[in-house]
Image (tube, rainbow, N blue to C red):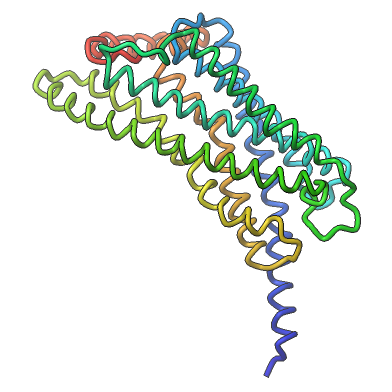
Length: 334
């Protein structure tokens, strides 16, 4: 019969070997994601600089492009710092700066998704009314305030309090770099991010429940008039919900139990397994930088026209314009 200590040592070894293998896989995933994400977002950013800001949707779209580009630029450092033989200096830089801006971009993207969903809700479900939040000036001020609030309450304090020497400490590298105040602030920031996310999540789900009800009514009417363009225009709106559910919800579900274990200095297989799942779902969240352009293309007529004209897709442009003309009477969100 095997001794208890030997069994524990065996499990620890197996857990450690899996974790080490995963440390090689995660950087590769980020390295593979970076080239297409960078190319797409630079192209999208160039197009957006040539578009006039005429609506609240365009305001949120442009800020979402900024957030996506910021997140994309953190991928190389993030990936390189995760490699098994990464230098302590590179790891420290990633912990103090790169990761902080990564999460800033992700939190901003989440909030903007909620604002875009609310904007779609008001324009589709309540097209005849005009609210303060639909004002162009209000949307510009709101997005600026959100950026400043996130940077002031999350980004700068984390950078300032992540200044300790991690040598001879039992915590994981990034947590070991934090002071006592930094560790407490880290937990507070994570809790703040959770609250913001689930508020946004509830808003998005509620908005799309109402939009779905409106779409069903539209389907019944458009069926009788055989207007296929109207139906396609309505369905495109659900791209926002698709991107939100795929990219963000898995990570935030895993983040809840992982945060409780993250501040514990002891290393267990449960903590290692949860970290692997967290890393995978976090990478899935990062793929939103490649999926968000679908929202710009299908939900913003000005962006779509600029994109197709810039890259000479004349036939595709004519096809989309035909569908737009068929749906303009029913869809006010373009």
